[in-house]
Image (tube, rainbow over all chains, first blue to last red; front, side, top):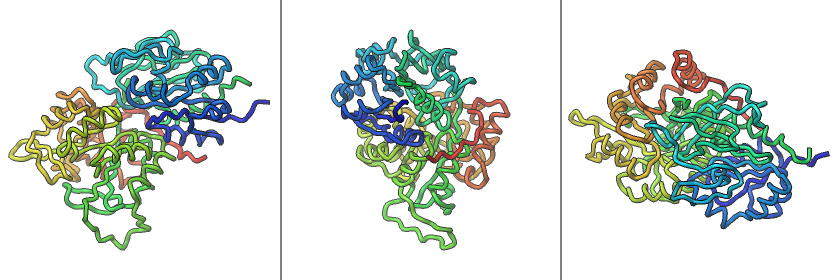
Length: 208
Length: 271
């Protein structure tokens, strides 16, 4: 018998925690926005939201989040975690926004400025996301689906890529490594499609 | 591929949703929070809420309005964030970094700045650094003066004495991530967009431009999408009087082969 689903949205002062919490509350009774070790330990699912620049966001996370505990929860206890937008980027090996900065390195790849080939940047709006057949999310999205993006930096490629999208050139829209998930778009702003994606994330259980 | 966005603009004046003509005549048209829900259900790609209340001005309320609960931008943004799950830009009356921070905390994704571009460009620059370019939208109101498109601020009352094109370039240099380009002459006229101006500005900038002002029918969107590099078409008045307006507009564009998100009515999500 698995315990009821509960979400901890990791709070380090990112602007969009409110929106992420709101959509999560339509899916799950137990949603906390916190950086407290107890809240992180007791949740079944973790979400790392993000907007803004790579270097500043990572700096705030290092100051305000118990990253060692989170790493242990994800890597040893195999607790599912989802990174969103900058929350994806900081999990990667490195980023180049604001000068080359090492990331947490939990996912493969370097986040660079989008190769938009003359298209306007930032990349803002609804773009089609193609999930790989073996992606955890593939069963929920048999057809490619539009999600809302707003960013100028992305992974051009990653060994952990699980979905891609195109804007002037192909880039990585989602990455997965076991229980670790991350998306470059904003599910909390992607209406029904975003809610479906988060709902599928909550179906991933380590204790199931 | 990236889809062209269809964006309803909601104008709020002294707590009421209003229709605007040439920035000078306003008509109350209803409840601001219901409008959020409608636009969300009809599958709008994004929403822009502009509070155009002029300081110190009092509006005699029409007494034939059904429950005209005056509503603050804060109430609207919070409601939106709890029920609509779509991107939202909020503008009007923003003068400080704290004004911006508050709106983002309530749940806005972007803020649009107009008068601040003239009064305190250094603050605009600082805001782009602090909150990220992606959430700073330059709202530019253009008006023809002696045959030239000139940028205006303060609700269209004050000339910047700078061409709209140069003003837009300056906004990009200050770090704005997007431009909301409105044409005062076309506002509320339903005579179509100012295509030449939109084409000129979108060509010159490297950031996305949202075209606003003059839409009278769905065909007007086609002209913008065919003849300019605008990333989005926005309209206010056009979307208020017809049931499922946004859905129908997108369906028209989608069926005509334009790259818009597939029109789908979005269920209103309650727990």
